[in-house]
Length: 128
Image 1: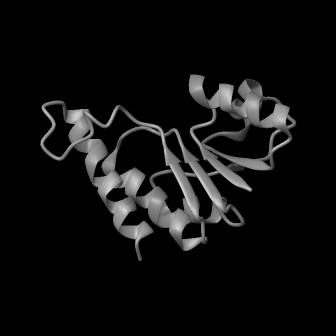
Image 2: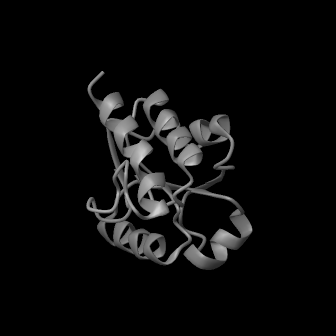
């Protein structure tokens, strides 16, 4: 099962369509189920989750062995999402973010600096 965080945005909606077409087993973690059904349809597995609450994210990811993160670039929230993925035993994770040239510790762009800690954390987690 794939856990999808950020399904209601433009890229997330396209990913939901592709996963449904392929018959892939996935679950969307959403802030508001009613609003998400309007965007994604009623035939998508969803669980309400507060991305600012690590326990909520971990609960929503139970049973997911893969995680696709399309959420914003808040370093704290992304790190919590990665920790939750590891806690539930996820073995594969994709975080859609800016190009690697901008996601650096000393990036001139703030968003690049925000994206750096989660990338470094996941690398460290993946080797343990």
